[in-house]
Image (cartoon, rainbow, N blue to C red):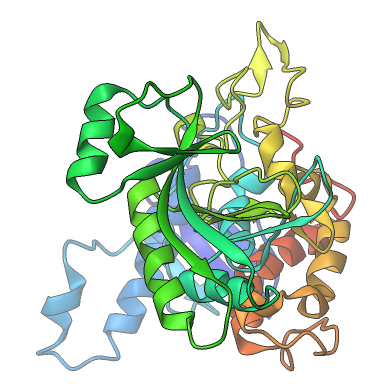
Length: 376
């Protein structure tokens, strides 16, 4: 079946006969002023619209007809109601890549925010965030009778004004290094970072509530950090993800972090997230525009920059098996089967994956499966 027009004389068209096949994508080409818009817009679109309006009642037609003027066509057949899609010229900058243009990187940010594990590049250990209950449980697991100090660490040096504030709020003891000092003695303190003693206890049963309260107070005092000291050493905790080995603290996962915005922490500090330095790819980030820090945030064992290096087919394969790598902290099942079509996947994972997979499959269907997501 074809769409047939005979004797089209709209505007600058001169008795034109046209047959367009159904089910095919047809492009109308020609030099400027040859009548492309006259045929596509002022003839095909308007005639299709008017024929649809003729099926409505006379009272309804004025509401939809607007200023449509019937084109000059001797005969038309096979024409159904038409839709006109306006042209949209989209421009991209030098830093725009495939994942940016199709917004796969945008949706992957939410996936990493909910599913990424943070692995310390120095120690190889997973960085986790602590809460008061977890720190209290750590203290409860110590051998009975162990002497424990709960302290709030500060990176600055104690000065006279700060010492006075601590005394006025009831804190009388601090650690500088491994040495405990009594602030009420008014003796000069050594230079260097210090930690405020919030509570001193002996490990035994029935102290969870007291310890949790002291930990909460330490968190508030030092901006989300606490140290548990005993004879065996110092164990640091943080409300932000922290490595259990070296104590390194990482930014909390958020969609803004997985962007090229240096102010949010995810942009390369060398190139400012622009990927290029003096017209050449930035050496510090390998031309990705992302901070090396984001390599620590992993999904299925690969960091954020590595996901951007994947081809379209490779990213689809990763997404298909993603449900088996969901961390327990996200409240997702870790024994769910790998999914290719998402119908049987965990709903939370499926909701995060769906917009990513839809865009990747679009590229794969166009034969661009070997294209890298970071390609410009």
